[in-house]
Amino acid sequence: MIEKIIKPHATLDRNSQKAISRFYDSSKEEFIVFLHKHYSLEPNICEDFYQESFRIFYERIQAGKITHSENLRAYLIGIGKNLVREDFERQKKLLTTDLSETFDRPEENESEDRIIKQEITDQEVKKMDERCKQILQLRYWEKKSMEEIAKEMNLGSVQSAKNKKHHCLKKFEELLLKRFQKEGLL
Image (cartoon, rainbow, N blue to C red; front, top):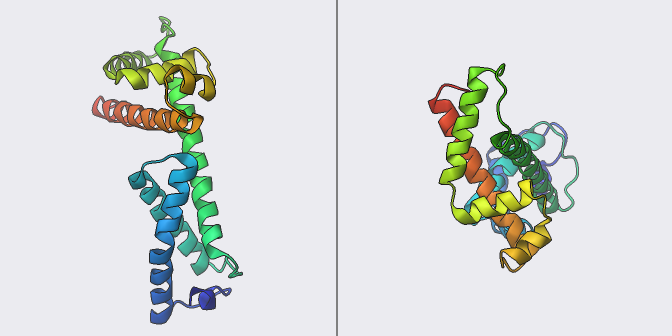
């Protein structure tokens, strides 16, 4: 059982590796269901978070940082929750900066790169799916709450609105990063 290897400076032999592999397989579904239910994330996104969470969990085992064996699944899910929150904050910060710059007119003394980034951001906003454009506009330009957005867009629940916003932010961020890279701006 995996609890036997949760000891400071435990060596991971062949049996330990098997125990970790079984724990990986047996914890995956519960983890994905939890993230999907609480954060309304798509299953493939939940699986990505599971991979990263388990990598961190495994590194902590190897480093002897996990010294208790009580409720290891809860510990693993806790790692996942922290990763999701960090990801939401990172995306929010990136998009808020990019979107606020979209409506600010660049001044004459700004760098050429900033002006090009502004133009690319404007182009990508125009290409966005109308529902995504609307939810981001309501949230970031009109400063509406997620509850107001859910009602206005008939999304059914606040969680659905958050999920849609997260999906749109992630997609928009990916498009911007690809364009910025293509133009040599990163």
